[in-house]
Length: 192
Image (cartoon, rainbow, N blue to C red; front, side, top):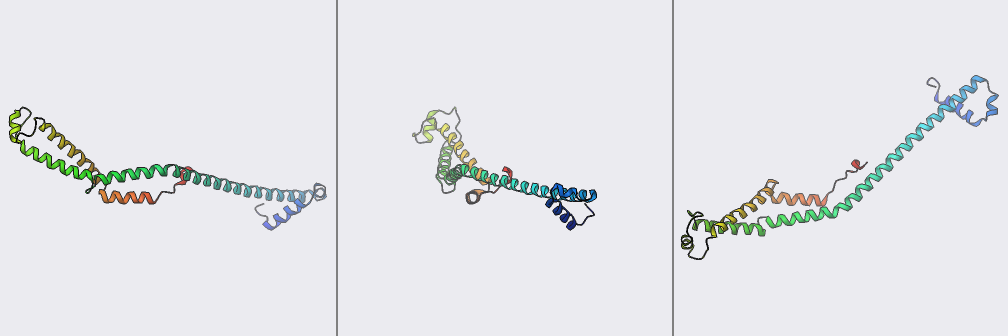
């Protein structure tokens, strides 16, 4: 069929399709073969076109289902994500420069410095009387343990603050939370 004109193939296929078997018997054998070959060629072309159309529709259906599944996943996880973002926002507010954790850190650092100045040079074996004398008789020997605890507490909060600073600081973290809250990805291709 490669050397035959498309119009001629269409005409012969139409003629063969319109004729029934008894009419085709009246044609010469060469013309019968030509008509049937053209009809077969056109039928194969239609089948290929139908198959491609069917494939395109099937892929479109799969894409639609993938997008619907992504939306279902988003709806199911949106509440969790929003709660997590809210929780993280609250944590940041509590350890931010104006938050209560920073206020406690400052107060703990001041108390620790005061106790350390008063107890400078003492060790675990120092007598109770000397500790009481340095602190004006108002504190028990457990002051050293308290001072160490305050240092550890201040260091722990400092580590959290340094971690947030390592992520870009409080301002950048707040901006990223706003971006995540406002925009969500459209990655339905993975579900396809």
